[in-house]
Image (cartoon, rainbow over the protein chains, first blue to last red):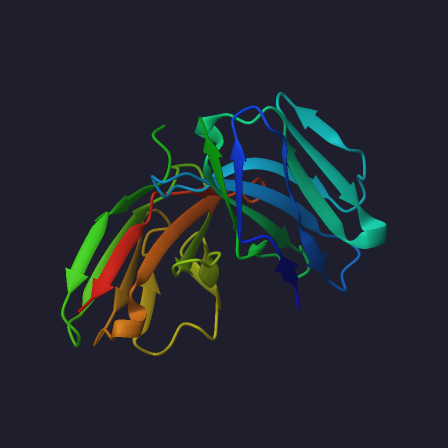
Length: 116
Length: 113
């Protein structure tokens, strides 16, 4: 069974501060995919990144960066110089290809509030 | 392409009534998923279609729930004899066969009174 834990329920920061969201996952599969999604107040889940288990290289995309560490089963997400538009719920998710359905198992989400 | 479309956006119904939701996936996507999301939680998997075939159903999907994707295009999710515990956001997502990231719709928010 797959499990994703996002221990931080809510984070509140002032604009321009950095914020790091933690994600810890559990799976017995050696091949798996990790994701981050953003859910703004409109409700639609917006895809941010996908990582496969064989690629531990960290990634940066604009103000977003991701730190994948298999040794600690973590896939953390950092927003640098946060902006009010970053306010949303962020979900970490995991999928495994063994059943060929690629369904996502989500964490409970972290609500980020960026204050002006 | 306008993305994944769900209808209605909101549905308020009385306990015991039946409701049906519709999802129109991105046109070339073969995979279609239904998820349920309650307040303060992440989405939970309900069921999965590959083309018109329903290949997997979660144990969360009681016998009051049924989903169809008759021509491998749009899908419907029906809940019979609704209960207050069915109140949630119902999300639809679609994806390609090659495990590309899922695209989600805006969801249908169901309130059972």
